[in-house]
Image 1 (cartoon, rainbow, N blue to C red):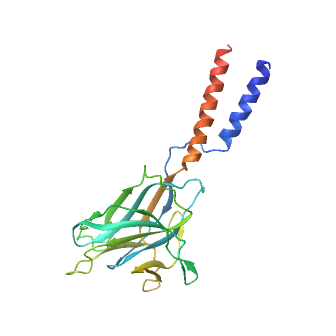
Image 2: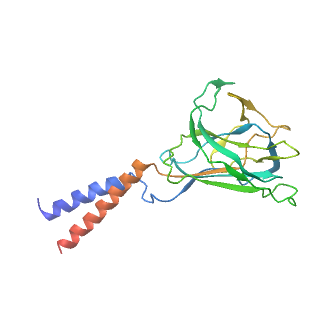
Image 3: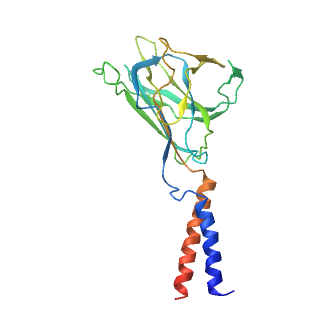
Length: 230
């Protein structure tokens, strides 16, 4: 085969690979963000509770890299909190699939007392959980939850800040609360949507990253071939 026919063939193959795949394969993308619209309230309880969320963007951007939430606490407690991520494949409750399979459970984190001079709970305490390296691929819809040990004991008060609406992705009006093995859909008072301050970032799934690398290698090989023929 002549050089003039080889080059177009190689170029066509590499172009097809490159055009079908995201080239910035290492960039983190925010797939859910509800940290912009503070309603100046918290939901404080000793029970595990959390929000069912729907992620935005390309469905291949689902390898989780970090999860963040903003909570308010008037006490410190070492190893007092736990975050969990669930698939919504449990028994139906009120026409909705409840949290089922546990996808991820964090190590216990330290509950840190928030700024007591912040009367409107504007800033709270930020918790960021590094998920990079876990290989956790999350579904398009999932439920995150949190539990605070020591809450409601001796005047202790801790809870995630209420924010609404999300700026990336979406969440419903109700939230999930767990009582023993049973999940229940719950609402907040005063017609406030039960959405809480949280953010999730992700990168393309490993298979997408691998194919993107193949496309990049193909372009390098084509460039090398052209240089060798000069």
